[in-house]
Amino acid sequence: GSFEEWVEAGGHIEAEHVTVPLAKDILERHRVGGEKSPSYNARDPVDVVDMKEMLAVVPPSSAYDDVLLLDPRGSKSFLGNGHIPGSLNIPYASLLEPNNTLKLKSKEELLDVFAEAGIDAKTNKKIICTCGSGVSVCHLVLALEECGRDDSMGCGRTLIYDGSWNEWGSDQNTPKTLPSDDK
Image (cartoon, rainbow, N blue to C red; front, side):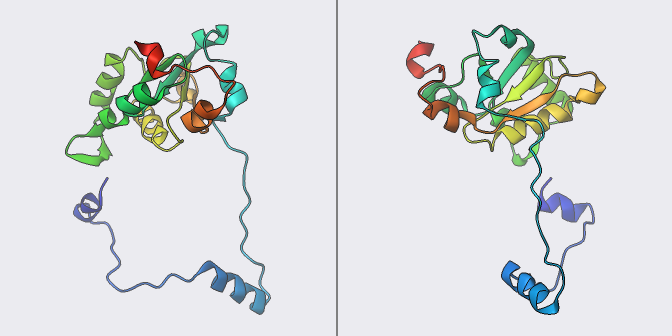
């Protein structure tokens, strides 16, 4: 939801000026004070596929029959810049409230958006979501989850190809559907 909805729901808001320390200051305090420094330990990505995995499912691969490829870029970008063969376009703007683009449509409206595109959000097929750069794909994954897509509930897995069109489109060896191919 939005900030306004947070306030309406009685969410806490800081009224005083809050100073957030810089990371270098926190690290220095730990170094001087002899405390163990805070650390970040990266984990292997979950539910993310790479180009090699994508190449294995893109048409004409026989594995394509068990996978749906969805791309939420706007239609101009999807059609005008090109896309991964076999991808279906569900523009992310179609998933959002028209008067509040910070909010997804209702579950019923989202199910209608997917149905109009010929997609069953709860299909047993694996769904791989891709976009231009790995950002707008998040709207699509969240919308699928809002519609009840959950691999623990018998639906297929929902995965993200985070290399997206930026990686795919710039690689000379990947198959592409380009604007001239759609005519």
